Length: 111
Length: 113
Image (cartoon, rainbow over all chains, first blue to last red; front, top):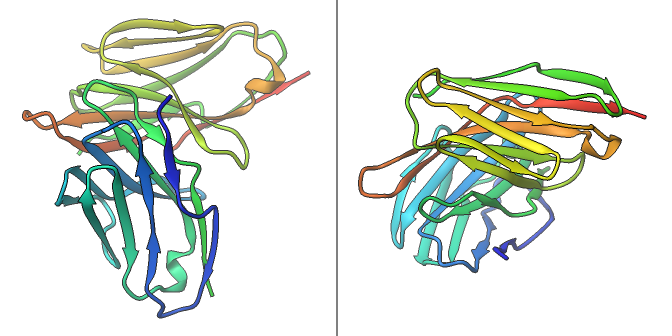
């Protein structure tokens, strides 16, 4: 069974802090994604990666960066956290012609 | 950019009813996903479709590529089916990479006993 694991379920940080959200998948999937989910806005793509060291901007990349040094790990970085980045963050991975699998999400609060 | 529209946005039905949720999109795709999210819960992938029809238990998903439309059906609905159902479309690079999903806003389904 595919497992997508996000490092934290809940996280509280302060404005201006550098925040790391980690995601690991165990199915050797090439493609990994970071989304945020906000009430009334649905799921929005922040960044994705289709190979190690490859990254592409999604719909709302501002204020975020990502790192994919190993195939199984895709990290989302908030360079200087702001209150408008308080959200639910979801990581997902997908193999070619396979369903997308999501992690349980990280509920991030920026104070 | 693909535009994904779901209908209805909200649906309340009685236990046992046959449920249909619709999804339409504007640009040709490689695959379409139906996802389920329970309150406070994570997201589960129900189906991935690129053509035809798939069935899993009481859930049936169909897709019409020519009409750019998909439906999710729930037969003999049950209160535990209460969740948000999300349609998402996937575009693939010709080389096999994915450029992410475009999501519908979701359908909030409540099944009353």
